[in-house]
Picture (tube, one colour):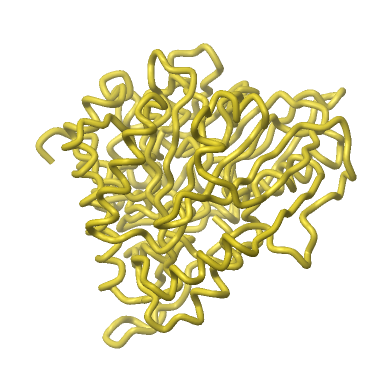
Length: 464
């Protein structure tokens, strides 16, 4: 998420003028809950959950908001709990090798607090304003086959409902516990994450480079590319054989306040935002004026270099004004060549997305509902299919994105290409898809129906 969206007042005709509505970061999902609750302290939150269990009132569906980074219906519910006003706490041990923080801290603010003590984590995800609870619940992953966001995570505490279904309890899942693989990627289905502990590293510094290259220079041997760079991704420019490479290499030291030059674009997306905004015909799919934009960028982009601490180098999308709806699907690297040919075949028939396709590697894990849980593989290749939502802001355009992606989903299945989907991004999973590809049976004992909405029920419950 690139901005901390807050609820606003609905203004459409025929609605209550003070009704609360929400939009996700991409402005792709909009919903209006019947109940919106913003507790001021943890005791208030426990009492609220207790009142629900006692039968004082029973919302049909209940969800807890993180940072509204997800562009799927995972956040939609009749009743919403907003934890942003709960106290944000942080505590370091004596030698600053561990930190305990409330889970409503944003990753950005946490990294800033760590940096003030010369410390950091080993990786971050793609958009650092996400809350820690949101990052963990959706298992946000960095662009690296060597590191995860959670390799230094010691434990997670969370509020949940006891097995008796009547009592609010606090649990702690420590690394090695049976519950730990359920907490990472918990989807908000097990309860409300409240507190975490991370081990810390001395602050890490990186040198980054961005340039347009041939796709084959990066993707012909992804292992070699990963040996050359610690973190990398390439944005496949639509209907071309080139992409914008972003790569970061660990260095011993840099300016602790180092960042991307303000007069230069951090990312191809910033240039695209300015260019696409001037194309009146712009829609969800690539058209000829957009092709001219990409052709010009490929010829004139140049090289952008920067150096600085982890918190500024990774990610690189912090100030990009573009709002993006995204599908984030993982694949076996052995299928990469066939996968790209399959995508090109589909796009040539049905149109290309209006934004580049992000391609990167992600280290695998063993979390039950993780899209990166691929037994037998060290890493997966991730494709992020992206669509600007700042053009064609109508329901018809939203439908165009969904239809286009569903067609691609079915095309890949028919081609026999195995894949999994990130829960917080656009997907078309049903119960059978989830049961076959995720460790659902091992996750089920941790699910609490109180925290499910329609989106999760359809995917986690047979016959729903």
